[in-house]
Figure: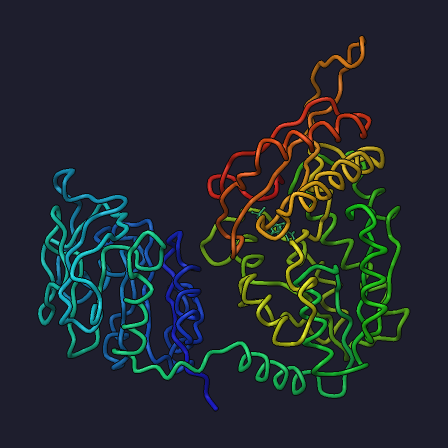
Length: 516
Ligand code: XMP
């Protein structure tokens, strides 16, 4: 059965992944493709609707992203958001210009008035806050379109050609700041595209298992297991598809948290999958010696993981007709740079050396379209225990990207001890469920202190805690002062080499969650 699909055509805006999330939250499967994708490829997906995203450009400039006008003749409904709205207007004969005076430019929360007889706004309040972020505006709208929303500053906040199923909004319905934004997207999907809403995790699970069975045939799979949520969920999914033809390889690179290697080993021994632990601590530390650049660390670790998997494949007679599987998820792909997006940081699973990839028949990454909370949902669907599903994420490169500057065994041990105290105290305070991810970072800064009657000159430790659901954006966690105080006192007293502790109070963006 063909999957009911909506295509998000990506023009480089910052909220594009959020649009995909919202569509899936509404029960409709959705894929994001760069605007440069050949249109025949998009057409092969038989989309029931298309969404043009926002983007940083001005549509009237010659070299700004455009779309082949034939897309408007397919008979497929289109929703344009911000730049996408201006692009639709521009392409269909409207006129978009730079806002002449500051009042027509709109940024941030804006009171907006909607025409609720329009299908996009049906059943919603006539007035609400929308989130604007545009310096250009539609001076004239194309023939066949009507104005269906306005604000005090701008008469053309939303346009619609209901006969053709084309809608454009200047604001961002996908962000939480827009009241009823998700309802507007739902209206587009169900009122305009006539979606049935067949995207559920149960469905995804079933179709993915079937697809994997077909793709793998009688072959075997070596699964790169970190013990974190994503690779554990992947292991359960793969086990469902191919049973004991699956071998899970857990690489202990010496940069795990305290006792983590043993805990993962114990958890997976209980579970009846073929589990192999590779103790590669020295191998990784030798390769990382003297390296302080974050991306270089990531590249070294990503490549070394690949070489370990290749060696293990040899050891277990996994042939070039067999597969390698990784628990790559959507944010890994995006942050490692996809299409026009900037490389924020290369996630370890995007860094396999080509000769390692060539060693296998293929690399399987069946979670690569999912967000973290969707992966968790899938884990529940597969019957994984809650403690595994809700584990806080731990990045593949481990403590290597939480030790700023060069990495030594001694620094790793210091950080492990401090991090263990931080985690223990957060759990003691009953906060371990409400903070999405929390960890310690060993900075490369040393400062003067006084302990007993003596001078010290030691490292500063940073504590980081964030709340988030998708890990694409995050708020710093408001840990109570008395808990921070207990943590600080214990770490200073119990861990040698640290004499100062700071708490990171930056959200993402502008910071990222990890420091490197
Ligand atoms: P950032 O630091 O990019 O992190 O805001 C977002 C989430 O991704 C995790 N992370 C990684 N996970 N391999 C992973 O498996 C990596 O290379 C990697 N880098 C960051 C990070 O811990 C956070 O949960």
